[in-house]
Length: 354
Image (tube, rainbow, N blue to C red; front, top):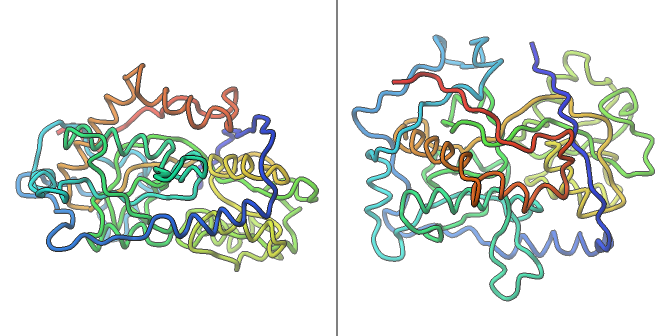
């Protein structure tokens, strides 16, 4: 049974936004600003060590065969702990300039993880996800700037973790049962849902029959594509909808939409709202049709790191000065309607206490 949500995502007014051509140019420029830099030598993240036994996710090899996990994947995480372990010890043991937390992020999701084009020569990464990364680095390494950011396309998030290119991914990544077969997640730090983005002039009304004979763009490896594929097979998405257009990163869908190559985009409502803020000619159509949660993704056996991040999230939620709410107010409140979107972190639930 699919979870259905009606967490409405809205928009506030945004004046003076650049024309579509400018957005396309920025999208292309963003790709060049943060190259993927592999650390030399033994700079990759470590895995969990002895004494940290991960709870079994399911009796079967496929966690999606377990109804509890399929329905509540956001609850399949370990209880918080501030203790160090093998994974964290190896991160701390990195020497000199390599003593950094290596994190996969986005660089072109407006207000989540992006480079501000008006940010000067440095043009540091900014956004809601980036604030969380700095908080994690502060806790583990004592320095919020002890981070090596790596730009990771949507379809490379899980490979980057499994191949040891990053310690974690903080990139609007939805927790779901299929991904739990490959990586571990923290407790959720944001609640959202899939939603349709289309031109204001379009006859598309939402996730309904108005998508008939329309070309829909999604990112490769995204929950949006998985949902559309599942719905098309089950008959819940109109059969004539064309879902064949997939791209490496979500912003590419906005560019395709602007160029008229597709009729609509399906992505998380929180991301869609930010894209609509970039381009005033598009808007969210209808209500979210799923309920999903973002989590920090890590290696499956990095139990100590998972527990530590969960403890950091506990403290981050409670911090009324520089915590979750302050970051939300700074980055997201202008694009998300507080009266209908979740303007507070989702309450955590853990797989077990021990």
